[in-house]
Length: 246
Image 1 (cartoon, rainbow, N blue to C red):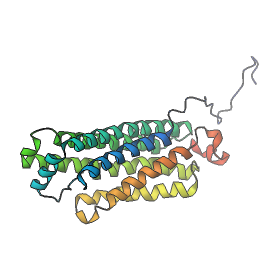
Image 2 (spheres, rainbow, N blue to C red):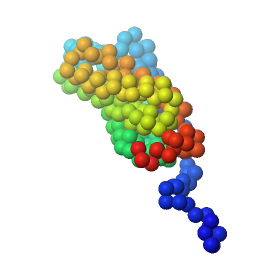
Image 3 (tube, rainbow, N blue to C red):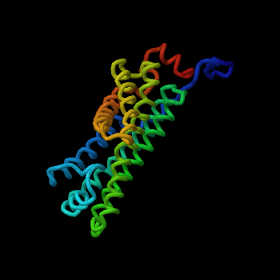
């Protein structure tokens, strides 16, 4: 206590205001997952099949786009919409990690990865929307190009960057014990799987990595969103003391 009655903080003791916690992370991740899965189910439910992949012929892609215009347009809207809560999740997670004392690049990596993953997912949704417009499917080459771009942006690009969002949260969460250890370690493993999915650009044999990485990462983000504390007072003291240095 100083002479004028004000509290004195030692140099090693940081003063933290309560601040605002932002929207619930778990709810944001669940909303993004629900919108994305909803779009898939709408398209697959009407067509009784999923959208043809990059290995399909231009004629089959054009035929699919022509026959299922309405469902593809609705699915595109859902996919585009799912990118919005994902971007908000990334920004909120970045602020939450800083509030918990994380000063290492992990928080910024989470922000960059999440925003880029959201952007590529939105672009994939827009590609699907373009394919659903009248007359586009009449040109097989254009249809094939837009379809492949939609796959690349919503597949490898999105999943790899989604892995950066997971890694950016999981690494400091592991070091500082911000999450239960099994959940934090699972995030590290999932992030590695997401990064390995970049190899799908080289060979179609690794395409299964895309849905594994995507849906497992979304599930992890939901769980981590609900488990991540809002204040440093909610984490073990030793971890809190390490936070500024990590």
